[in-house]
Image 1 (tube, rainbow over the protein chains, first blue to last red):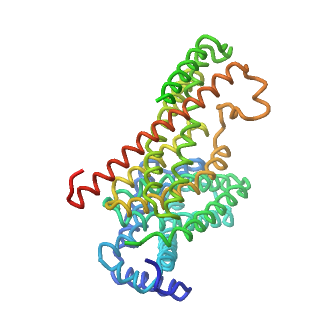
Image 2: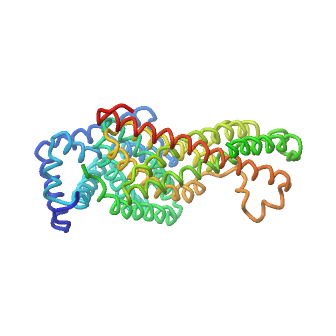
Length: 224
Length: 222
């Protein structure tokens, strides 16, 4: 039963540092994810060419690339523990909530690195009208937190199943559909110079709701 | 037994009333009658989802496997009604709007429910161990429940709807013939009864299966 470890900020910080260190030693997850993101981007760019002013398609494609990259890589944080048989040890030293929060922060950082490479490359390859930087970066940040939050929860669940990787994308997708719709519509609106307030509010509320319910559910993640 | 017969008579009477007694809406012509199937199916889909998610929360709180049975069985039946609502709606859309599917907000939400049901059931099949399966699927179910309301706010902002407003608004009530409303609500009662009956059947089956599994693991015969 949970929890004999500490549930403090220090534990979360320690988990985050441990995640970063073990990722940095091999860079296997990051390399795979970056390669996947660039591949998706290339496929998209190669097959549709420059889109110019078609901001509706541009916004959709941008989020499809980001979503695919996230779905291909974000379950990694938990699956690695299960496959390396290190989860039991981890559970001895920290509570489920601090493990999950640490992994959530790591996933967020991971997404950030992914986006730093993918988004400028996307804008370069696909063209498109100038961005309104404030709303665009705001939507990107909120969207990333929402992606990281729900895929951390689903990743923790999925790592305990037989299908693992295969199931992750399909099971995450229904949860991500509202967030995806709001992010795409907001990104399109900022390109067209329309206000994005409503989308930002929806994304923020979605993220807050997923984070809140995650905090309630993390305690039930591991019990056997 | 008496309830099953009553249910049969009730639904049969409502179907007959739908054909013989209730008038047709001029715009819809003969397709008016799809309504008596489509609307109750959609409503029962939502009821089943709420039932499944309520029992998921109860399972996490109490750790009683009977709640897990309720959650799983309600999800299976919900999927059935959801397919019924989606298919009937899609055929109706083809007849009235000219296309089987055009991502109307209502179509999007019913598709969303299909995805959630599908993912939930797929997740269930891939977890080993009764209690672990119950726990993990309950976690997923609760997380999915939280995201449901957002779709209702997000999608209408993006796509225009051809679907009429839900029946419960003040304005729509005046437009529809009271006889149509009466038949529709009789069908809602009938479908909810059907759902409850199927639920009780599947719950009994789940109980028997659990007992058989326990008998097998303890080595004794049932």
